[in-house]
Image (tube, rainbow, N blue to C red; front, side, top):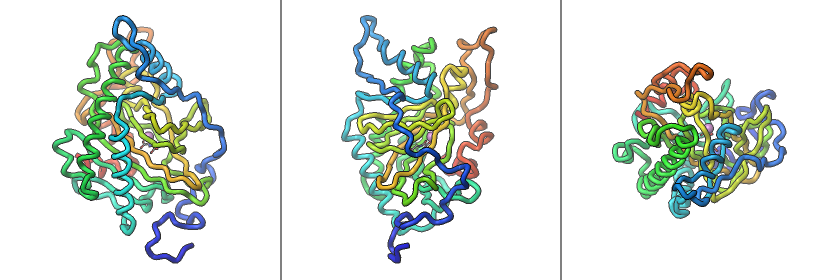
Length: 336
Ligand code: OGA
Ligand code: NI
């Protein structure tokens, strides 16, 4: 261990015991090849004569059925908006260097947790995390971090772009599922931002960046820069999601699986650590509002395909399923 008192928690030569998962939870097969089969969908592909983007629609539906995950390129979000957001988050995490207490506050605003946050049976995750609400933007922007000083402006610009992209993708999902356009209008706001820093780890075979989980969202849109580490469960195996700095990773959340009556799948995923590389990610969760009632679309339920899920208010779903682990209630309150 280095003696430097100012060193950050991860600047170590070996993994401290508090970060070592029991054997059965540790990542296996870290060398499994990057799976090229998670589809990369080009949103700029030619429009058909009727004005519909038929090719991406079919690709999105197929990927959402088979993998629950896809990546989009030519998405129309300016590169500068994305690099500004990544840079301001990098600065934010750098500024926490000497902050050694990571606690979930019981006040409104943002939640920063460093790796001392409990994960599973007292074992810590190899990551730092920042979460805050994003909707309605004008009501929460002033609750976000104000250092770096550009934070609020830069992240607001990013959220506005993600909102546009998610609406576009959801319109394509409507078309693919045969739901009327605008079906998701009232159930799809970028409600939550969760940004992660996964520092290099001396032995990634012992640690995890995020435990295997499903997203409780409607849709999740993730930017991961050019870094690897995200793994998706496919046919009982973990497969790596390829790194593409020009792409956003999109995954189907539990609410969209419910609304689609399991025509689209919410799939388990996790993050493993890298030895040399720092992974940074911005996850944005497109969610229904807390009071919204979520159930399979009537249009997709019939005698042959009965409803597979009971109706539930979104906020009850989150609490009942402990969507944020042991901290679910505290996080729900803090972000309200
Ligand atoms: C999440 C998630 C992946 C990542 O926040 O739900 O899966 O790369 N994040 O940070
Ligand atoms: Ni996730």
